[in-house]
Length: 275
Image (cartoon, rainbow, N blue to C red):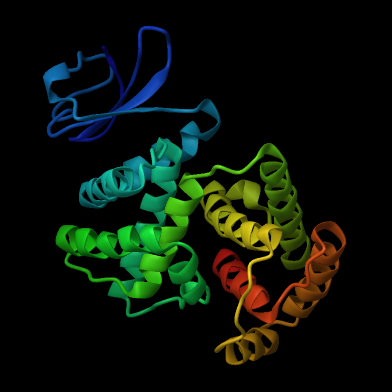
């Protein structure tokens, strides 16, 4: 096999004999290598197939991310496979890597985004949350940064999303939900997510999780959301427009009354996207 692209000393891209583009990882795999060089197969530790539609985003993220965070994400992936029998795709893995990078950066800056769905995540996805908690130790070992239970909840969401087992009609409804909401956010807040694929992918991961809750009509509490709700409404009145249109859409197409907690959850991630 020949190297197509070198991301760092330990990650390269190549093609299989049938033309399938792949990401290879292994200690020293890309050290002092350049495109066209032969790959030392004895150094290959992991092989990931790459979908064409996500290649550009994948290559950018791998090229910009410190190797210790990629290694940590791979260990978390193996834990999910061992404990939950989940085979996380390279694209699901990249989504998790992306989240971990920003979580570590925020922690170093003394910032933290509360996970308003943490109680439900712990209750509904107990085994997955245990993997999320293990992920905190793995990340701390790799970076020296200890993230909170809130981040374990977010990592759990990535693991749940990676284990999609919905029927086709559920997947179609999730697609309808995420597509409509992204378009609504772009319209109300004058954004174009086509210019920032990583922000769009991050937002879609959270919209997918919210869509699952709405489709399954999962119960939610109203604990500790009034303060956040009032804060967002005072900060930007466009959130009121978003709430009105969201409630109408969810009621009409999903026969579900959008709760205040679900709305606050959405506003948290819209705020991340627009900032």
